[in-house]
Image 1 (cartoon, one colour):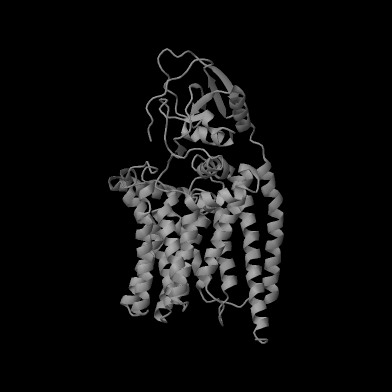
Image 2 (image 1 turned 60 degrees about the horizontal axis):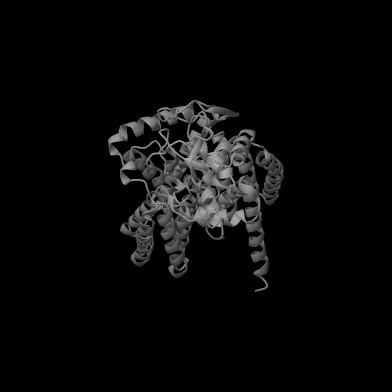
Length: 502
């Protein structure tokens, strides 16, 4: 026991250094995103739904949300817990971004495996996470043409929980194949798969199908014990089925029709969109570097996976196989769904990096060099804090103008989805702004339908707004300028609302 204590302390020190490096990298990434992509992080129409939900729950309001197939359950729980720190909406979203990225590192570290002779799981995990952060930096700002996939992990709504859930399941699968008794890993696998499928069915494409495929190939080619394969397959597929069945109580909450998400007749348009965005990415130097890095990582997964297969290393072969197959499955989904939703393609950026965590180290890095790198990251992380604080404290004068005018009016107004979301979140009483379409029909999408809907006497619009179709006889309103926003004030005249739509 006495002889083992130095080794235990050394491993604990290595883990602490790894988490310290990950924290520094996360702080650097969030500083970059908050400074260059603040709109996506704080005011994007989709990005604010978790904050709206958590704030509504905290106020004890009636709940009747109109949601997409994604329920945002883990994301709302995390944001809600962080909101009790009293950092305000922007501060909480920023802290949530750091937590999201640290959770990504935690998933990578789980995939990297245990300490063993010839392996450096912590160094590999930090290297893989550093690659992910590098992809984030190459993607910003979010308004630049091309793919923006890695930086979505910093948001509370663009599937951060699904990203982390996928990494955790791959990590648990790796640990089980590596000799950890299934009695220890299976319960956690079942829980993560069930919750991930419940909150986002996209998890089935990103994780369940690739994992089942990898285990199936391993057992058919007799690389793992059939009984172990049976436990793995039962845990993953059974939990996914349970998670999907648990969505039944939320049927009234999910307002999107299935036909909105499966449009194989638009496969050609989806392929054309992928080609267009790929070209836009390649047209800028950082995008070209991003593209080259992603493709190099995928190729590395294939090469190292095949080498592992030849030497009968089922663990590395399985991880690399999933990391290479999941992006292809995600791309196939985009084409079959006929969609232009690039966010479905996130497996391209968070799974191929795993090859850096599981591949045998090519060279041994001297301890002095490792210490110097950790120290440099620490300096970078500390330097990133004031940059982030400055971004968080940057006052949105236009948004403040709108919210101040609305609150002082004491009346109810309306606006379109991409325009009204951020002001709605900033209001003490979000029900003072009703979400409508350009024909003044309430737009029940990512909004609490239980909110009161008082008489509408003004409209809020900006450059993203489609021109309103006003009722016949409506007089010209007074126009109140608030920077990028314009308030159309009808005074005591009430604008009639149509039937709600989603």
